Image (cartoon, rainbow, N blue to C red; front, side, top):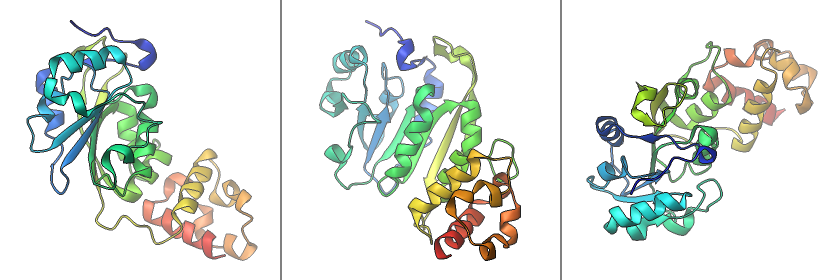
Length: 256
């Protein structure tokens, strides 16, 4: 029995054992005892995770994949979560315990997966996964780069982001039309920001919505005082600011 890839779920099944093993090896498995794989499909990555000194859970929305996993990975059966990752409250499974996240993510929801991970950053010390290559590069890019944006700043505020390797379309069934990229996020030791974190998200998102404008213009909705707008930081465009400068900017807005 094999599982048919479903277009509406964005499924592209990895069929290269070497790459699956390599992805499983990206995590350190230190300081946490559990790992959650998103969208395991037929378990090509799962089998390598099960060899690690960790408790592996998988979350899968596709009933055909769930049936396949239950038939072929009997000792995993009670750790298969038949839910939509984006809608499910993982505290039902992990309580307040730390866990890593890993997966070959469906491209159509990969950014949403990352945003949900950021919401759970207190519990997720490590995150490793396969994205569309250009998205993975965007997440890991630094200021001054034209692909640097909301995903880059919000992720790198809390995690060190590293682009690991590129994966060609030929190792998937069906092959996607683009290259894929695997990245690793390791949570920073001090990941609590010295500013209002909700406001930080809002400032970053608002800044990049009009990325060609200076911050003086793109942040008009915050009703900044003339005194504050005189600060030279507001002469810059959002892609010119480092993560540290966005934190500084948020503190300025917060304290006005």
